[in-house]
Length: 463
Image (cartoon, rainbow, N blue to C red; front, side, top):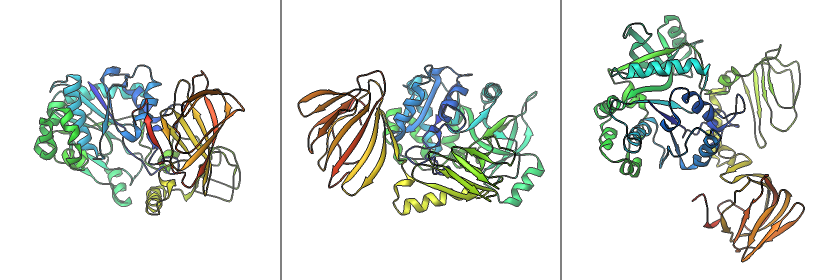
């Protein structure tokens, strides 16, 4: 069995924590590992490290590398960078072609497809279901994992299960897929008992899915005749369609395998609230807070003190540059807030004040007219690109570690409480040759201090 992890989503429903340039699959929401790391570890219980393929895009490449490098068993070579956003059907087709051309897969090999941002536990029970799905898939079925609904949820699509397939196992022929229902319909589904939440996880043989793509999505299926490299070059020409619309809702070979375990796609703040423990008043608290007469409220803080008085059934989420305040049960509308931010071209829709780079990170401490102040962290043995700026000068003060600095044709070492000055239009580079993180304060000054005023001459990360 091979496993394809889809890690290219830009999740907006967990704003302001999840943002376009640092979405939820890279967040550590329920422990010290990201959702992507947890996904990889679950799969490693069943498949080998060499059999895991991660599908993402160039914007997230280094986030994926950083997460997977911390899991020593997972190779970083099986990473596919989508050249454009084209939904799950083209992504899965490209993943199939990668498995054939690069991993030597045959038609009877099983491919398991999983999102990268779900919480599933216990992982050992999930591993049992995963092994069972391989058996069912080898019989020529397309297996989808269904979740027994715990409540009349309107935020998930549903699967209606029909007759039992096979003997001695709980697999059902899928009668139909249902869109996200209204509240009344969701209650009816729950009462009927044969409807399941659609988890977005699938298992199938490469031959079966190739046949179904050719039959029901011929524009995608036809491209499977290309080589992987040709298909990648033509990826933008594929229709922007989900695997549900392209195949699952039309195929006669789809079965559902119910999962009797905990599953949460963290699709909203209300979903995330299920993960956290609650106090005696039903409150969820994280960070620095003081509350009075507050009940059934979620308070997620960052650096500032949060105080609440008389709140009930609310949520308060604070980050360095934005605060979300909403009533519980309305969190699906967070995406509408993000839409408004995008329409207004607000940077808060895309970036946090801390931005991660392959060499480390930088945090904007203050941004004003003709100046910007940053705290820059460079990881051990990493370095920024050799670059120049047309519109700004930079002044660096080392506050931790030792820096190797290139300015023009000069190289020097700058230690704690020492500084270096970079004039406009001067080639320069910042490196950390040490074994501890390098931290500096950078003061930029000039007529333009945007991030796109960078001319890279040499870059180890090939940006």
